[in-house]
Amino acid sequence: MDTPDKTAFLDEQLDDLRAQGLYNHIRTIESPMDGRIVVDGHEVLNFCANNYLGLANHPRLREAAKRAIDQYGIGPGAVRTIAGTMSLHVKLEQRLAEFKGAEAVITTQSGFTANLATIPALVGKGDVIFSDALNHASIIDGCRLSRASIVGYAHNHIDDLQRKIVETTEYGRRIIISDGVFSMDGDIAPLPALVEVARQHNILLMVDDAHGEGVLGRGGRGIVDHFGLHGQVDIEVGTMSKAFGVTGGIVAGKKSLIEWLRQRARPFLFSSAATVPDVAACLEAVDLLEESEELVQRLWSNAALLKRELQALGFDTGRSETPIIPLMLGEASMAQQFSKALFEEGVFAMAIGFPTVAKGAARIRVMNTAAHSQSDLEQALAAFEKVGKKLGVIS
Picture 1 (spheres, rainbow, N blue to C red):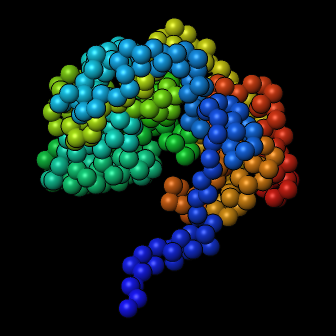
Picture 2 (cartoon, helix red, strand yellow; picture 1 turned 180 degrees about the vertical axis):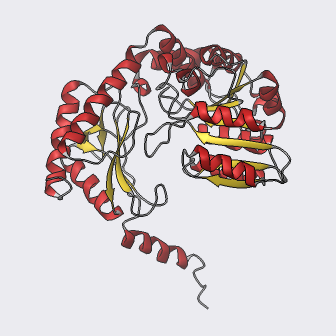
Picture 3 (spheres, rainbow, N blue to C red; picture 1 turned 90 degrees about the horizontal axis):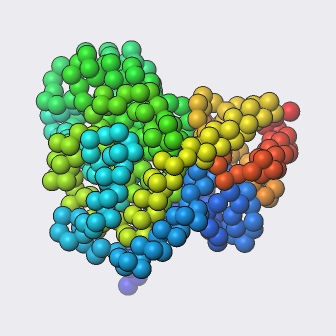
């Protein structure tokens, strides 16, 4: 008797993704992460990664990781609350608090888990979350896990947020949550206005600064520093997986907040601590950023050049205010064609489509970094121009 294939529906759904141009073709990187990398056997310019400052392959971070392995081994082998907190973890949290001008910091395994750790620990059933319509998936998932009521407000629209707050009359606790830099469009949250709304209504305010860490503020101290709002944002979430070049999540705030998360944040309580080389490399990244703003300045200089020249060629770069540069192409199939043609010209820049962005808003997200030279940018611009004209995106 034949056994029915219980997963046959998955093949049909995968075929449907391919037909819609939404299937992700995942390429394999065969070299260190840098401005130029080897992908599927080809050396290409890398405009895909979130490695904003080029630290993922920085010699100082590599050496720091090696030294730490010799002293402490590889992994702690336990969750932080049982036997996984090493002196390196404590030192990193202290250094990050100093760097960000916060009372205290707790670290998690990733920026994603930082949101999953924080939101359900602060609000639950009977509470209300006011969430920006374009918040990251990790915020959305953290909100769902909390079981609080989720009230969305129009992207970066303060008047709509005010209306939603006034209209929502039944609640226990309330919290406003917004990305700091929105990862697909590169625009920045109106944090001063959010702070004022939170103050007026006595609501907690949380900002996820994943794409602002190492990018915004003095020497990359983030969006709170960028706007000079130290002490006025209740919860600042971040990551060390992007500009810091390593991996790990950050939650900064008052000592009481951080201590509560140590007691009740589930990813902190039930998942093993970050590994020794990761923590050591993150520490070195903090040291490097405190010593000099050169890499941050180079990142912004590269971004300004690339954005200006892409716009001059006729590309639509959306509403970006940061080094994230979206080339708006519309349909997912066009974005995939564009990405494939770019790769053939020696430029690695992946297509972004639904569900990461809305249907009809597919794009190439161009991620320039401090690791790119002037000649890298010129070579990339020539490739974008050639492909754009070939596919009829620009004239």
